[in-house]
Length: 146
Image (cartoon, rainbow, N blue to C red; front, top):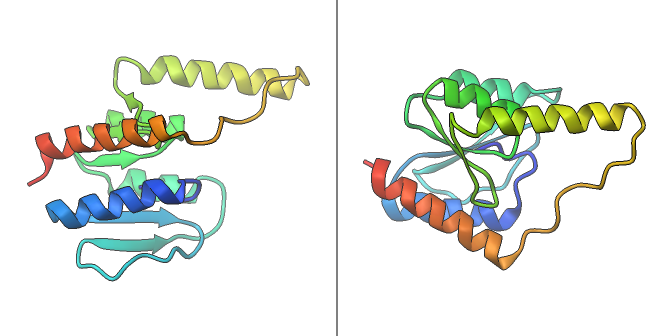
């Protein structure tokens, strides 16, 4: 789990799911995170710096692992390594859609850097987003949890 910018409610859903199905869950962030004491949940604090947490996740990921992130370059990288990706809003990134998302991200970045006014960040997480995330997580766990 790319935990640097993940909403607390999503982290809570993940903790409950990891404990329920007894699968390991790692929160990776460049700051300390409070996590409950559980044999299934751990927090990994990496150094502060650009993409340090993302690089750590990419180095540790294995085929069929689930990575929770909204970071599109990280998503593209771990998908190439055989992992699955769900955003905190429940959107599934796949080999079929992540390149398109990456191209759009790069386009928006170019627009921002050329001083073209582009809208702010994403809207606040809604109840529907939380439900979409929980559904996507349950679907993954039903298929891949051992």
